[in-house]
Each structure stands twice: as C-alpha cells, then as structure tokens.
Length: 472
Image 1: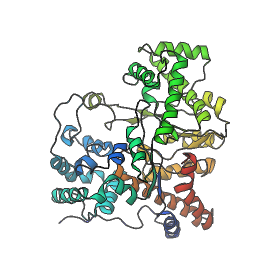
Image 2: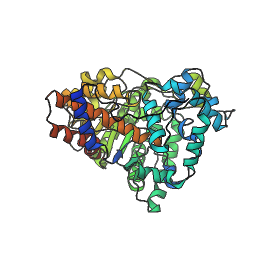
Image 3: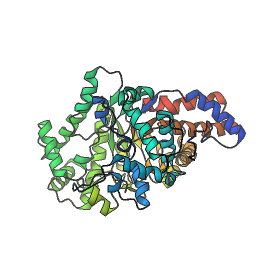
Image 4: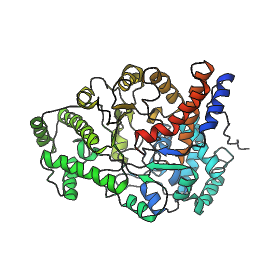
C-alpha cells in the first residue's frame, strides 16, 4: 500500500500556537498575490514556442541539478539518469526507466527543500495523491504524461495558472534574444524579460573567453581588441537587451566579490594582457574586479539593477565536469569577503541613490557581520534573499534572523526563485511566503510588531519590494 502525498495547510508555520495563529492570518493575506520572478534560468523557448513538455523525466529529473545531485551522492550514475555526456557518449534514453530510479529513491529527498518543491508540483499541478515509490512509479509517470499532453499544461497556460505577473530569464550578451522577440511579437500577455549575464565576456577564465570577446565585436561592429571598443560593445549589448528583451537587470556570477577601480592606463594594460588568452589567475581576478566596477558605472548610466552572485566554486568535481560539462550539481559554496572586496566599488558608487546593487551570498557567516551592516548604510546596496543552498526553510529563517536587526526589511528585496525548474516556481514562492509569515507572526506574538504592520511588511516582501528593486 502506497503512502499518501499530503500538503498540510500549516506546513512551515511555527509550532507555538500564538505564533502559528498570527502566521496563518498573515499568510492568508499574501497567499494569492501574483508571483514576481525577477531572476531565474528557465528556457525562454518554452514561452516563445509554447510546445508541450516532452515527458515527466525530461521535466523533473534530467535538467534539475538539485534532483540528480542527490541521486548521484548515493551512487546513482548521472548517465543512468539521462544527463547528457559532454563527449556524446551513451546516456539513458528510456525516460520511464529514469523515472523509476527517481521514484524508487524518492525517500532520499526527505527533509530537503527539493522534497517540498516536488511534492507541491505533484499534488497541486498534477493532482497526484500518492508518494512516489517503486510500486507506483509507472502509474504516476502515466498520470503526469497524460496531463502534459493537454493544452492546459503547456508553458503559457501554466504561467497563467501559476499567477505569474513577470518572469525573468538569464542570457549571455552573445544571445540574439530571438525567443524574447518571438514572445513579444506573439501578442501573448505574459511578461517574460531577460537579464544580462556578461560572465562569458568579462571573465578571462570562462571557456573560450577570447573567442567570446571576438564574437562580441562581430555582432556589435566594435573593435573589441582594445579597451574602449570592448567597453562600448558591452554597453551596446546592454541597450540591445533593454530594447529587445525588456531587460531591467544584470547578473554577475563571479567566484568572489572582489572589485577594483584602476586608472584608465592600468585598465588598458590589464585588458591587453587578458585578451591574449593566457591570463594569470591574479590578472583574471583583477580583471573581473575591474569589470564589476565598470558594470556599476554602466548601471548608473542606463538604470539597470545590478546583481552580484559570488562565492561558488563551480564545477568542483573534475570528473563530472570532464564527463558532463558545466552546471551538473557539483558547485560548492566558499568563504566570501565583502567588506574589503567591495570597498573600491563602494568608494566610487556606494553613495549613489539612483544605483541599486543587490548582493547575494553562499556564506551565511557574513549575514550579520558584513552584509547587513553594509546594506544598512550604503544607499546603493540591497540584500538578495537566501540563495541556492540556502533557498530552504531553515536558510530563509536564518537570513531573516541575522539581517533584519541591522538592515531592516526595507534594505532587502523580497524573494527570487533563481531556478531552471519551471514547475518549482510556485512552490518556492509559497515556501518563502510561509517562512516570512512565520517570522512576522513571531514578532507579532512577541509584541514587537502590530498585526497591521506585519501585514504591510508581508505584502512588501512578497510583492512591492521586488518590483521596486528590479524596476518591474
């Protein structure tokens, strides 16, 4: 007999009765607000072409590093889960077999945020009422596959069903934005915008950096072999992204938060070294740091919000990287400095009231020591929500507890889901709303906020702050 798949109405609320009662009331006031998804990695082709999702395994397992990362940790081969090999070697193509492995090992996700997201999608989107296991894997597969064949489960219909008001994808400056153009030309009322992610052309250690910069020159008609032409090309693409993709933000996934503010002569000399393709680690870090400051300057000029996502040792598992390529679940958080690293940028731009720089971290030790004091002082800085490994109930609670006393609520920017998994978006936002309702409910129960204030803050965190921060 299979176990039922249930979503308790009080999930994630405090156990204390007074706090739970307050949390229920606060959550009720925000549960139905539209979703603002200002930063993520869903595929814009889904919304441009509006084709059916192919099958349950391709939707839930093969592209989701949260899912296959956990399975890999228990000795299940990535190629057995259908993850494509970089060399074109054999990977499992039987999607039903992939699904069976997942269902047989569903217990591995107990206690993880992935379990909550998956359960929410299974129950709320597909009406599944039993917990996946070996005995019901085929039955659940068939139920999801049947749903995916219907028009109401196509990407645009789900976007509308999820009550999404705006959703941002993320593209390289070399992208022609054809899918965003197609969405706009279609007349569909859904709003899908892009974010400008310049890493391939500003990080000398990015794969094919020199070739990427040459391609940047080709598509802009600029001479990217020199510093001035290179900067002009980057600015051109920012304008292109605003005009053709509704872009309001940039995103920077550097290894550290290091910034620099070199003289023009120093910057020109540094660029001349890195564009040769054999930059030292020190020159690569210095160049990335200078480019963060250049991007802040451009954001002050064109009004784009700037996001900095540092502190991930990406593709840490050399064997997985060699066999399967980038972004295959083997990224590891690292210790990150912000106070010293950001000072050159902040000395130049930190006091600008018209600039918004949103800081994220994978290093929770800096919440109260560095990030909250910085954002609680500099007009240009805001704090992004608990991110990636900390996009979880406990991670969100720790975030609120450690940053609120110094930065307040209004130097934060609400929630973003930062996901490739489209069907997890409503689940992730629901978790964030419940955790915020619980945190605010505790403040009400402790007589630190009145209920009317808690209601207003909840609405701000859920909807108003994110729209303002990302200029949406």
